[in-house]
Image (cartoon, rainbow, N blue to C red; front, top):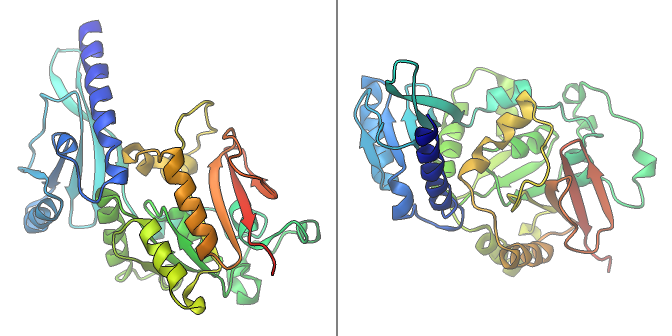
Length: 330
C-alpha cells in the first residue's frame, strides 16, 4: 500500500508540473499530452470526440478504455449532452485490482450556474466591487431586493461593460451578466476554452428563457492571451474600451484552507489545470488593464493574499476578497 501511495504521489507531482504549463501556452505542451486524453462516452459521440482530439492534438481513447498504467490522468469526456473534463486516479481495491477512479468533473453549464450561484444582490462582494467606490460605499449599505431580476431597474450592473480576462468555465462572468452587465469572456487555456465553448453551444438550446437572457449578455471571444486583447482595446477608439476589467488569477500558494462548500468547490474546479502567473505576468496584465478600463480594475484573490499595489477599497467574503483599483479622475 505504501509503495503504491508513493508511486501515485510521484506521478501526481509530475502531472501537476506539466499541467501548470497549460495556462500560459496557446497550445498544449507535449509533456501534458501524456496525461490528457479524449474519449467518447457513447457511440453517437465518436465523431465529435475525434474532432475534439484533432483540434487539441490529444490522443483519443476507445470506448470503455482507461490508462491504468498512469497513477493519475485527465480525460475530456464527450457525451451526447456535454463535454466535461474528468480527473482519474488509479487505485487498488481490497482485492488488489487496479481501477481508474473518477475524482472530479469540470464543465460549463449555465443552467446549473443559474440554479446554484448566488442571486445578483448588490451586497455580494463581487457585485459590490463592480459598482461601489470609496465615496459611496457607506451610502449603499442597504441591500437590494432578493428578486432583483423581476425588475430590471434593480439590476446593479445594468449598462456596464466588463472584460473578464480569466474566464475559466464562466461562473463569475455569468454572475456579472445576471446582474445586468455585458461581459466579454477571454480564456486562453485550450482545454478550458473547449469546455467554455461547449457551454455556449448548449445554452442556445435550453428552454429556460431566464438563462438565455443572461447568456445573451455574454460574449465568448476567440481564444487568445488577455494582454493582447486589452492592448487592442487601448489602441482602439474610446467607446470600445470596457468600463471594468475583471481579473481572477490563480494564487501561487494555498497558505490557508478555504471554506469549501458545494458551491465554492464547483467554482474552483478549473484551477486544477491552470498555472499561477508569475509576478511579472501579473504586473503586466494589471498595467494593461489599468490602461484599458474606463472606470476600474477588479482583482479577485484569496482572503489571505497580500496586497500587491496601493489599495483604496476591498470587499471580502469568507474565502475571497475583491480588490478595487479606480481610475484617476481627470
